[in-house]
Length: 294
Image 1: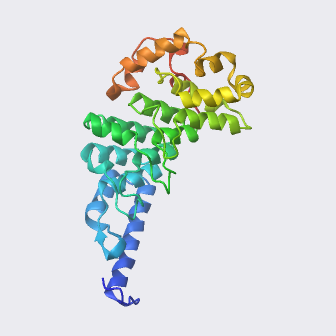
Image 2: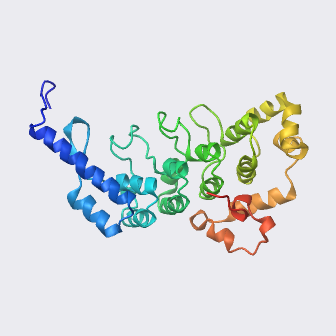
Image 3: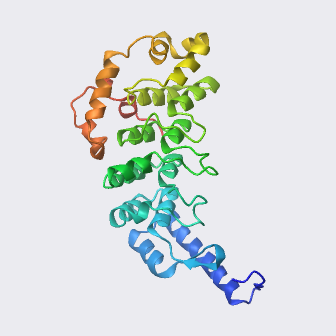
């Protein structure tokens, strides 16, 4: 529209924007109230519009509807969207929903809100994508403004979402991926350990789970960091773990065995494939044998 156009309370443009806000809030409220899927889809397809920059009016896409389902943990609606629109539901939403138009925020939002069941369904849906696209999607850096350029696995470590972390790793998230500042997930956890003055149980569970997916060992830069303050890290981590992380001793037989087992599991059936193996609890990855209170 021309830059000198004046919108008044009586102008058609103003009334249109006001109506869009009204119906948009009605849809948000309907998802929040966990209304049945058929009601939500009727609203999304026939009744609800939202206002975009530049005066563009549009209906909600499956991607935007899934974001609402994530915020309010509407699991049946998320299930419907992912099953009926597997590509559109995980596409980049419009500018009014995401300031970064190169990345879809669904994975990071699922981690941030700890929506474990919906995260699991998203990851299963991604298994239907070509390998190259799936790898890029699951390891993509989040929006710099919202997630600080962190990947989903970095965010899971930062927020100590042990179950989310295990699901991401089991579905192919790289434990060696770097965020926009060049830090790996292990660097993030070590920073939390170094800064923490509280109970480190969740941090250690994240660390133990992450290490099971690092068969190549610890990056050189991280080993050097640990060696620079060896006394402090030996006290925090324990001598055995410290020696392994710095490359001065091999991992335990248990660790090597679990790393081999986890690499052999099909990602499209994780964690079900692991649960079907007759293993005693003490041989299962820590995040799967000890459920962390949500």
